[in-house]
Length: 95
Image (cartoon, rainbow, N blue to C red; front, side, top):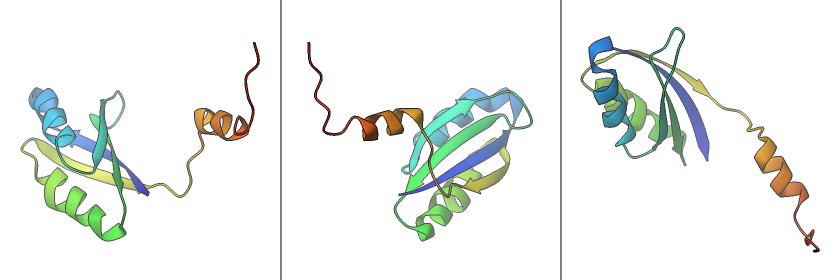
């Protein structure tokens, strides 16, 4: 699975509509309204690199109200939740 974090600059008056439209795109797993330089952050998860262009360049960036994007590709995932689950494999809880 390939994960891309997309920072989105949107027309301020359309942020909720832009977020909903982006969330409806196949390959987009979450969209967050955030503070800082970007207005929205979208998590894109696809199986092949070629699919990133389809999701981000061909669809996400063309949503009405999107003013610009900046994409970051994740190399590795670090998650406390994932680590806890991995270390718990084979461990049975006793009451």
